[in-house]
Structures are given as structure tokens and as C-alpha cells.
Image (cartoon, rainbow over all chains, first blue to last red; front, side, top):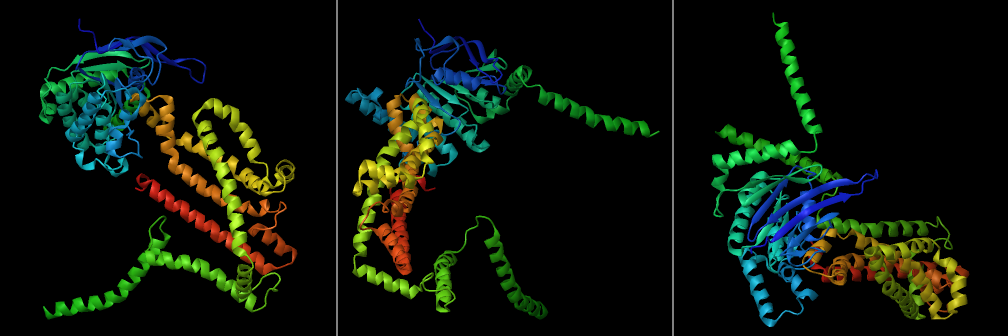
Length: 289
Length: 287
């Protein structure tokens, strides 16, 4: 029996709005992630993708439904779910190495056996080396570049060996070149680490390049619109992004996001602008004769 | 070719004057540009001038007898008064005043910092204590003197109590604000790593606001000194504030000057100590 690593069952999340009418951010959402699967979640802004991740992390509670990780219902945050945020959450007062070892000092890990402790230590060392952080081991976070900080954040989230790694637009604040490097680094890392990962992003290309499966959420209220299986194996290079099949898939997913976006105002504005730019040319033509 | 060289020389000669003008213009631009750095030497000389100019102005005023000695003693008078006071127990007065300020301040920090931490971290604590704290905070410390005498008596306790009352409520508000400003994401990160609320409080809230707390204490130490004269209005027989009040009674303006200047210097020394401590304790705060 191969139970899913993460299962989201009929989850809704409503927020009380100022007008008194509750706003439904997520409505009756179901999804699963199986063992060692890398799932990317995309969708227009307001589709509740970040909320979904926060619910799984236990940082927020669903209004209805249940979320299970390894079969156990989520009731709050815990070390079985590592989380990487868009903004770095490294503690500025600790060095890179101290940040990596932060969870070691917590009461949840206090009863670790000496074998577990030495495993933890060697795991920290291994992650430090794998992420190319050995050189900055004793630096403080504010001495590192944004890309470097996110690498430490990922390493820190992985060090406790979580059942699932949750990433909320982890590269959203990085420049394009650094982001590409991070993508390849993540591919290498997950080839070695074999962790289940849920990756929220607004960048469709990033989602396809990294994931085994891409889930598109529709907005208002947030629900699963479509699921796209990514046909390529885990060994991927940047050239893949230029291939016809990749570009077609990207187009398909983008079309779904556009079709399910909650905000129509921007599109209406765009349409009225196109109409206006066309209008003078026709009158011009009318004058000619 | 010779003509070409001559021309370069010519431009250079003219350029010399132009370069000076250009440099002058650049310096002006640098001084008027917001937040632009200035040369270190210029910075130091301006800081020294900031002290020397008022001193020179003061000297000029008193030397020309534009203002009577009763209103404005000359720098020389003040210097004489300082030497005189030094011989008759300035250090003792300074010592007892430092003791009172430090004791009142320490007591306020010991009570105010934990209260501020709890008010900033827990909403129920904020609801219970913040409104009353804000209410008492606006009451003038000097108005408490009769009550303090009634409750604490006229010993050392009453002087320390006045300084305590003067700063403790400010420390509470400022520490609570510092805690609220700590980004949520640090706490969330700690929770996702398995931290319990108590651990988040100790390892994130406390550690994360430590630098701000040291800064808050530095600022409040300054305020504690401003309450010294008020505190030593309470049946004191020694101390810098007491000496100033005593000098007022005898119209010894020079001694008042000395007292104020000495308090200023001691305050400055404490401030520098706190700054050095901050730099030493929190290397990660320097960018």
C-alpha cells in the first residue's frame, strides 16, 4: 500500500472580510503528492497558492477539510514539513553554520540518540558542501548575496530530513541569471536528496523545468483547474526550455492561467487600448481620398 | 606637431584654473547632496568647530561685559569654579549621582524589558498592560515626588524611585514596539523547524530584538540623567543635581554651569559605552 506523502482532502479556507461577507480563498480543494514527487503549483495571483502551502505547513488552519502528511492530520507547524519562503528567513544573528544547526537545539530533537546527532552533523556538513556554502560557513546572512541566502534557506529546511519540502516562490526575488543557476542546483539537489517537494511559483517556465507535475489553480475561489504531467525525466538541462514540446506545454499552461484569472480589469483595459490604437488609423484612411 | 604640443600646454594652463573651479564646484555639490559622505578630516574639524564656536562666542560675550557675570560667568570663572568644586568633593557628588541614576535605570530595565517583551509578544498581555502603561507614561515624574516621599521616605530609595518612574514606562513601550517590528517570517521559520512557543520567544524574539533593546537602554540612560536634578530635589545632601540646586540658592551661576557640563560629560561617556557594547555584541548588525 503506497499512501500519498501529502494529501489535501476537501480543503476550504475562508477569510472574514471588512464587509462582513466571508471571502473564499480556497474552495473544496483536493490534491495529492506521492513519495519523491516534485509538484509545482501555479496560478494567477489571488488563486490561493501561497495559502495552500501555508495550510500544509500548518501556519494557517483550513476552514474545512483535512490535510495529511504521511497519513497524519496536520494540526500545526512541525519539523516534518520544511519551508522555504520568498524572503530569506535566516536568522540574521546566527552565522550560516549556526542557522543550519538551529533545529538541533530545539526540544523536539532533544531526545536524539548520539547516532542521530552525528548523523545530523554529517548531514549538515553534506548539505553545506552540496549547496556550495562551505566557504561562507561562518558568515552572517547579511554578508551573503540573495541567491546564496536562499541556498542556505533550502539547506536549513532540508537538514532535519522533512517528509516534504514546501517552497513558496523561493526564487521570486532573485535576478534571472541567479534563478537559472538555482534551478539547476535544485535539480541536482533533488536527484541526490529524493525528497517530496511542493513548489509554488508564478513562473510557468520554472514550474515545468523543475517539476514532475504542474497543478494549475483557478482563482476566486481557489480550486484545482488542471493537472499537467511533465513528460521529461529528472535529468534536464537549460536547452530543454527551447524545445518545441516544452514551449507548447508552457503555452498550454499559460492559457489555462489566463482563462482562470480572477481579475478581468487589466484585460479589459488592454482591449480598450488596442481598440483605440486601431481607431485613428481607420479615420486616417478615410481622409485620404 | 609643435603647434599641437603648444596647444596642449595652453589647455593645461587654462585647465589649471578651471580644474580648481571644477573641484570647488564638486565639493559644493557634495555638501548639498543629501546623505553624501564627506572627507573624514572635514567631518572631524566640523565636529571640533561645533564645540569651539559656541565657546568662542561665550568668551566674547563675557569678555566684552555685554552680559553681567551673574547671568553669564566667563569660561575662566567656570574653570575656577570647577577646580574649586573638585577640591571640595566633586567626585563624591558625581559618584553618588552616578549610583542613583544607574540604580534607578537598572531597576527600570529589569522590570521594563521583560514587561515590554511580553506586551509585544502576547496580545492578552498588551490588552491588560498597554493602555494603563500609556496612561501613566504621560504623568510627569516630578509630580510623583510628594507620593514617593510619603511611600519610600527621604532616603536613597526616593531618589532612585523618581528616576525609575521617569524611564520605566518608556522602556516598556519601546521594547514592546521593537518586538512587534520583528518580522513574522522569522517566527514562522522557527515553528516550521519544530520550535515551541517558549523556544520561539527565547531563541527568536529575545535574540532578534537584543540589539534594539540595547539601543533603547542607551536612549533611556540619557533620559535617566535628565531626571537626576528632579530626583535630587528630594531631601538630598549630596549629588550633582543637589549641588546645582544649592548653587541656585546662592546665585553661584558658575557652579551651575559646572554641574550641567559635568552631567553632560558623564552622560556622553555612558552613551559611548553603550555604543561600544552594541558594536562588540552584535557584529551581525554592521552591514
